[in-house]
Amino acid sequence: MAASALSYEQILALFQEVAEEQKEAARRFQELDKHLKEVIEKDERRFQEAERRSQEAAQRSRELDKQIEKMSKNLGGLGNSMGELIETLIAARLWEKFAAYPFHLQRAYRRIPIYNEDNKAITDIDILLSDTEWVMAVEVKREPNTDDIDRHIKRMGRIHKYPPAEAKGKKLLGAIAGGAVDPDIQDYAHQSGFFILELKGESVVLVPPPSGFSPKIW
Image (cartoon, rainbow, N blue to C red; front, top):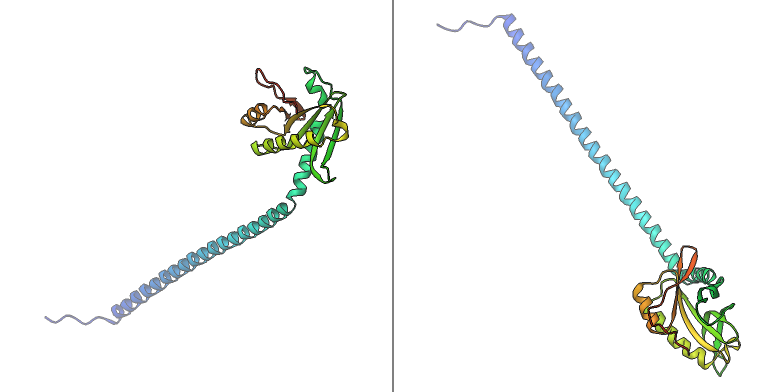
């Protein structure tokens, strides 16, 4: 038997059902499109934020490079300022540190130039301590190393050969002073016959020499 024809009401209901399905599909598509746009916008914001941070990091790097370059240009001046500060701290009442020894170095001079026979400055003394019989040439470094000690050995020879007025006719001693002195450097300096002075906070201490230590007299 042939299927009965759909009534007008049934056909209308089918159209309405299809229309609702199309509306729902359109709504879902709009939601999906909105979600995709939000994801894309969020990714763009993340990218922009990453780009912004990258640019800020690059700017900080450039500024740091400029600071380093500026500090490098002024390194000599900075080093001198630090050296002068350490010298000032160390020079104050330095003679008291040698109370256990047979000299009384109560006179202190700073930045004493040493001239050769042609009156040419060949070196200088950071701190020169003196009494009527002894003088001590103190080399000051922030963190002395073996090269500094070797150079001071050569300096002591020059001071002995071309003594300044305050050192003429006196026994010459040497010392190394620093803001921080590594134990290995202390050993090397003591082996070279030098006293060692070191800053501890705002005080200066004489590093105890090893047993049997005898300061070298130039």
